[in-house]
Image 1 (cartoon, rainbow, N blue to C red):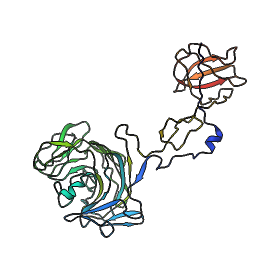
Image 2: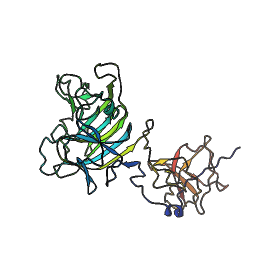
Image 3: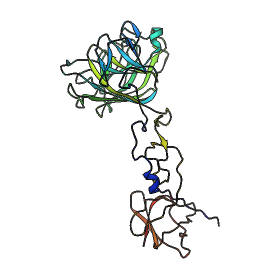
Image 4: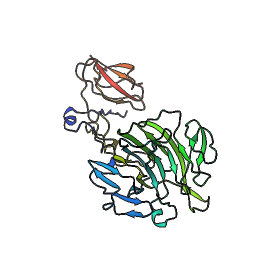
Amino acid sequence: MRKTFLAFCGALIGAAAAQPTSATKADSGWVSLFNGTDLTGLYDYVSGTGMVDVNTQTNFTVQSGMIHVNGSPGGYLGTIRQYSHYHVRVDYQWPVGTVANANSGLLIHLDSAAIFSKAFTTGGRPRSIEVNCRRDTNFPWSLWSADKLGPYITTTVTAIPAAGVPGQYNPAGVAWTDDPWGSGNTRVLTGDFQANPELPVGQWNRGEAYLYGDSGTFVLNGQIRTRGHNFQTRLNAANASPRIACTKGNIGLQSEGFPILFRNFEIMELDSISNVPVHARRGCTDRRAANYDPRGMVDDGSCTPTALAGKTGTQEVGVRFLSNTLGNAWIAFPPGSTAMQLLNLSGRPVGVYPRSAAGSRLPAGLPRGVFAVRFLP
């Protein structure tokens, strides 16, 4: 009969001691969009003018690791690259003394090509979705498309709004599409059933956006404020059809008439199929393997099986056991042990198997699966 040997993945003490013990932010796949020193990698769009030299403009300045926005002229500070699937986050702070209706925003799916074609632009910006920072009960981290620009945003709202009335986001509501070519200047407001999580002026807020091509979830200080899907754009601004999916664009920080501070502007790009972070550290993520990488965030299949000497008594050894199809297996019992106990992944005992006369072979009929092992005296 063919013998099947089991490999035990063990984290050897010496190997573990030689490796770093914790993952860094960069290991997780986060990349800074703002380096904290200057505006490298970003461009400036000025309302009514277009793109200007980011090194000579004065609306966006860097001080003490923060982006200071004067608010005038209007426009935005955008990324040179476009992105589709990603998690972006930024901290923002309204200075003490800011008025109640002060406005700014995080712009996503910016159509940078429209800057040159002028097909989908207004004085303020090209076609994009604004994740609004406006200081008002229902506005923080709401979604808005500029009038006659788009994109269209489909979401769920409390009730179908009347013409010109904003849709009130409600995850249990009814489907509704924000039509920027419709009557009035519509937008998707955050749900009024949630307490406004925005912090008082002078304190830092953490705004996040999770984008998956033509859909996204938008979070402020840990609270989901809005969701949108089926983002679409017109091929021709004058015609309602055909429309195509809006799946990518540049990312920007808006200047909209009021001073505001930004910091920690960073992105985690995601694979469009698996949603695994593109820039995350690859390595062996099995803690029981000899080459376990404690900084590894995505397993790369490189784990090296290593024999692990068990300990007698009731101490859990921390190895994994995988029985074969027939239930026959071979394992080296540590000296002094007379039996082996298997526990499922919830820690509940599955069975006790005595050491055979041969000294290593286990009886047939073992359950199939992955278990923790205890060697008993």
